[in-house]
Structure formats: structure tokens, C-alpha cells
Figure: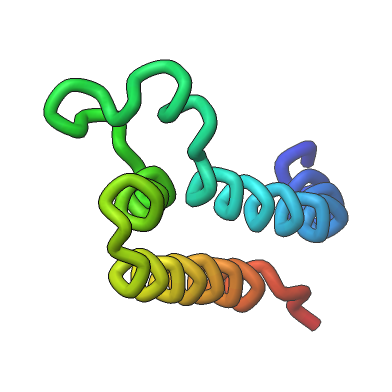
Length: 94
């Protein structure tokens, strides 16, 4: 049937592309900065603030470089964990 063809042929062939799109989209989602900075500057009551924007504010507005660098390391590990989890769940099944 069409569903069996889709599940057994099409989905395994799309797995590498899906993995690439998921990993790059996750990284870009964590790195959203320009839109927040230009349009709302964190918004009312920090409603549209992101982690990267908070790191920027702590480092260059409040001059708290130690906290900003610690948050940057945490951001790196969060992105790394999400990337590894996506590679684990989307690896080819032999």
C-alpha cells in the first residue's frame, strides 16, 4: 500500500535531510538575537527576551562578563545536548 511504501522507503531516505534541518533549526532557535534587539529590546517585562539577548545584556550593558560567559557555556552545552539527542534518535537503523 502507499503507507507501507512511505514508511519503508520514503522516510528512511528523508532521514539525513530531516536530521540536518532539525539540528540547524535548533541551533538557530537558540541564537535568535537580531530580531529581539532591533524590534523589542526584550519587550515589555522581558516577554520576548531570549537567552542570547540576556547574555548580551549582561556582558555589554551591565558589564557582568563572568555571568555572561557562564551563561554562554550553559548555552553551548544545551545546544550540544539537543544536537546529540537528535543524532541519537535519527541515526540510521540497520
